[in-house]
Image: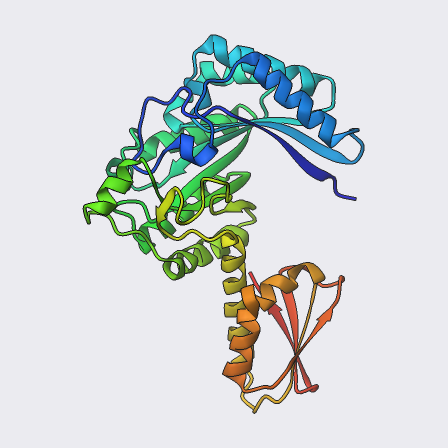
Length: 351
């Protein structure tokens, strides 16, 4: 039986990061603007532990999000990490995770993290095209990402890489290039974030001046669909697609433009399913009168689509009145068996 995952999140917004990337406003994204203390971190962890309860059959990690953790004053880093480390050494916490910039990684920094039981490091890559990094005011190069990724892997940490699409100067081709380069760095997992125009950022100014045009939802889904397929074909898990909705991160509030959707990942996965199924069914040359999809119950929402958009599309494209869906837990989540006219079974690999 797989263990249920629990994250104890500790937000350290803009600590350690002197850069103001055009898209970034950590206060709006995290909803937190005040500096953290060690006592606050201890209290947050204790509150989560009380909520999570006993350790049995659970994978628990403490995750430091926001800012660039390894840019914090070294004494502060140690203070924060030693609190987390105590919980890991009791056996209650399985992993300690943090996020940082690729140019804030070197051997000395990693030795300090290793001494304090950090096990997972996420790098904000965003793009691996130097022009895009420059236009986004990232303050580092694509080569910095390569060097940091190699060192992190060499020293035994798990590596996560975060990329963005739709940054200033970015394009469909450049986003695919970034994804392909990320694959070559062999990360343990990735995140994909479409660029949003958040209030109080340099990107907001560029947008209002007409110097930046964000992706729309359809464009963002199309790009993410292709990146999604690339990562999964190379066995790289995608742990998040799109920013998590919060009280601040909602369209019409602090998100003033860009491809925001509260279920953005499902939009992408539904499109991946639709494309694969259409490609399979279109190989069938005879008239289609009946369709049945047999699949894992956990994949049904991706087959159906948000507001049943995929089912509506299939009915229209193939001119069938009804579609039967049969649950089968024995079928893998990335596969669908398609029964056409009760006479032909097609095995469809989604990715």
